[in-house]
Each structure stands twice: as structure tokens, then as C-alpha cells.
Image 1 (cartoon, rainbow, N blue to C red):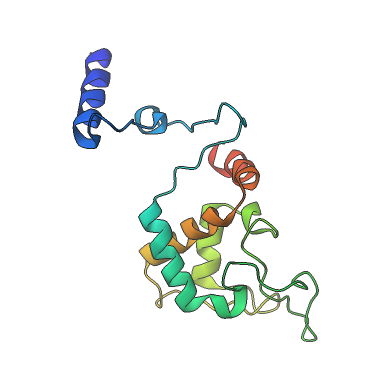
Image 2 (cartoon, rainbow, N blue to C red):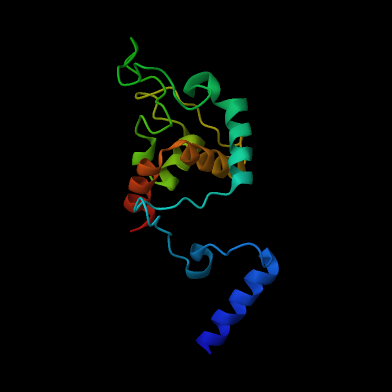
Length: 156
């Protein structure tokens, strides 16, 4: 029975994707794919979602986090008011130290007022827009950083 289901899924994938396209192993197994040359997790991010996330980011986030998530050089140093400036979202800062859920919560709820000035985007962005922005942020990370993030949060 299990073999039949597996074969049917494989046939369905070929019919859906076409004979010339290959089915990523993660689609069939549900497990991450590791690059044989680098040993790093291969990203399986939706390119359309990345594009949507970038558009939402550019419309709402560049003023604080920079056009490519680079933020400001002194993001580790508190301002005169004691609050930290917006951190970079690329591989150079700590965004990748957080799970997807924490990243989404930070966007929706903002930062605690005593720590930073990130506003709440709840009610201003849809859940889909927040998901799209988070995927775009992940697309900024280097392969090595994405691999570390995945192994710390998704691979557990």
C-alpha cells in the first residue's frame, strides 16, 4: 500500500511539473535537502513569495532597516534615549537568531518600548504580508547563516 501511494505521488508530481522538470527531494520526503558539495541545507523558498515580501518591505520597512536590510553601522549602541536602533536583517545581525514565529511576532507586535522603536504592524499588514516579509528576510541570509538558522529552529 505504501509503495503504491509513493508511486502515485511520484507520477502525480511528474504530471504536474512535466517530464523535463525534476521534483525536489524535499517535496517527496518532507525532509530538507543537503547540498552534496557544501553540506549546507538547500533553501526551498518560494520566489513569488520573496518578490511579494520585498515589495511589502520596501513600502514599509526601508526607512528604518535600510533598502537591503543592512540598517545602520551602530545598531548595537543605544541611542541617547536608551533605545537600540533598528538592527540589520541580513546575515550581519541577529535576525537569524530567532525562529519564524518570533520574527512574525516582532513584526506584528513591535519591540518592547523600553528596548526599541519598532512599531506594531498588526492590523496594518495582513498575515500573508508578514509571512512574505519573513521569507524575503530569510532570502537575504548567506547560505551558511540560513543553514545555522534552519538547524537551530526548523530541524529540531
